[in-house]
Length: 229
Image 1: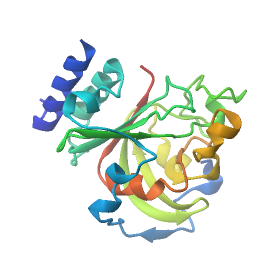
Image 2: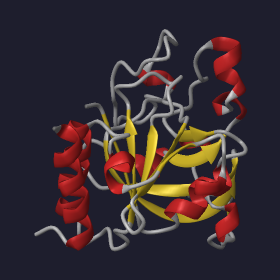
Image 3: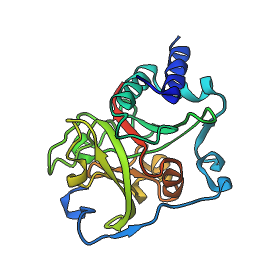
Image 4: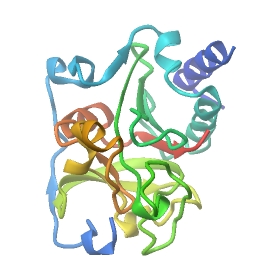
């Protein structure tokens, strides 16, 4: 059964509806403590992100079908996802030029969204659109499903966060080193210059000046849900 927070999100959904192994965090890495940022430096205060106030406006940033899928996944994995006050949903139906990584805060009914790259194996011709998912080693592709945010570490891409894949479609995420990290090719100016972001090796790569905001919002033990609507 859904808990109170999930029910609040579900109600909002009804309302609006009407990477590669070489960079593996499992080896030669240094752990990081979870970052603690003052509220004034949190995601809601970053003007480059899109902000909406009020539950209906906030949750309407996400496609209703995708939101329902995410909530069903949150409920299904409830025993492993203990922090349920905030979730992230990545809408891979949208191109990389869109702010398609949505952060929903159930406590205050607000949402933010920002740019995120997908894997080169999911977009072999670099069109800016994800064509396919893969959970295979060496695919360099993005995987769909629910992820549990885990430890922070310093690796090939600098400060990063491990992710645990909770579904059969992404359960190789930890061994594939599918993580959250920042990258120059995910910066906002890539859209002005090229009309799309660069591609990762399957990781959720965000802009270099957005990583602290992502870490601050999600922390450890929350869900990222990635899929197409």
